[in-house]
Image: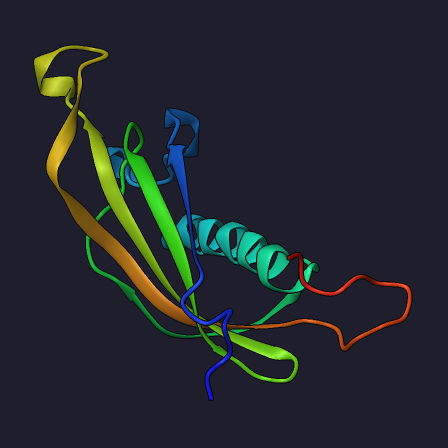
Length: 138
């Protein structure tokens, strides 16, 4: 029997400021996306277990397209397996808006189709039950 928390999905959106560009062409490093995955995993853990949890590992991290300063990135985490204390999640980062400096200094557009920039699988560990900590929110 599967855990009813499996399938829980949380999505965050964030504008990537120019101060976060790390490379030529206003590219943002891949570690930035991993930090966003960590943020969305924290909310999944709070919603599923009433605890922020601790990130234990990533697997199958794939950077599929560049992320640039001026982009709006949407990151999602889906709880795919809930063990006794471990939670396996799938992550996806999509560029949903992109700056268009070729059209003007502050020009930008909403993309007709989001660009999948990165995917990953990760494991978060939550503490076992405790008398002084509440269980998952209802």
